[in-house]
Image (cartoon, rainbow, N blue to C red):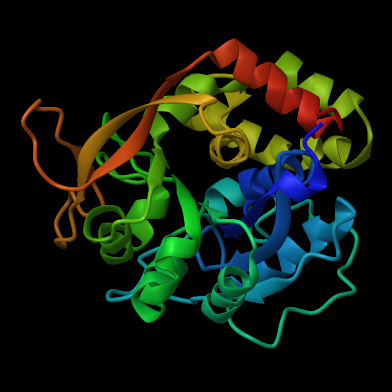
Amino acid sequence: MTSAAARTPLVIDTDPGIDDAVALLLAANSPEVDLVAVTTVFGNVGPEVTTANALRVLRLIGREDVPVAAGADRPLVHALVHRAEGWHGQDGLGGQSGLLPEAVRSPEPIRAVEQLATVLRGAELPVTIAAIGPLTNIALLLGSYPELKPRIGRLVVMGGAFSGGNTTATSEFNIWSDPEAARRVLVEEDVPTTLVPLDLTLRCALDGPWLASLAAGGGAGETLAKVVEHYRNRYREFYGEDGVALHDALAVLEAARPGTLRTTPLPVDVLCDLGPARGATIADRRLNASGRRVDVALDADLDAVRALVLDRLRGGA
């Protein structure tokens, strides 16, 4: 097991959200990282709900020591057209929020961007930020505190799609929710960044027997398996398959264990017009392509990833 002194400080910026909740448990059970803060953002549901859900999940998994700071409640420029209650339920947890304990800790008195800056200033090691919701908080952080960028070891972003979206024909939900913020983070900045798109997460879908194994493990994993059922039903309706893609868990696993996913450095752009391709991500695969490159996760040993995620969610290391 990794020694406490060598563990990478990790902040998760999130919009819980069913798969976000699973990702928080995965982070808590990953010995390579020290979960030092959670920041919340609008997205799957409204910001007051995402913040409440983060606090409840942390209590469920026994990590009430982790501070939670509420962040952006809208995109940088244009209003959000819709949220993702159809996928996550009005409570963000598939209608099963009552299965989780009520939070006893309140959000921090400072906002998410200030919390992120505080963590960066005080960390002895470079900090990994796993951004698994819209990128508004991260864009505001990088724009407000450029002097702190060298203290970020890596951004791991769950978002984007290069072969068709899940919110529009071209666009993935996190990027579509605030394309202007996504473009600032993925195109205009220079922080080391790994992007985990739908192209990989949908290939790593988890089937019924996998979910049954999670439920059989007891504890927080059993509770979250019940939460995931709403997500599972929506996948049956939308994709015609019995399974779920826990998109955010894949990104958090890569944040905890760099190199778990196989990446290709590519220039990426984000479309910010108001047409049907708004929020689309485009990768330039030409050998002579210019521009800032991000590490795009396009492949992995999928069976090994599924097994490792299950083991950690059940409490293994």
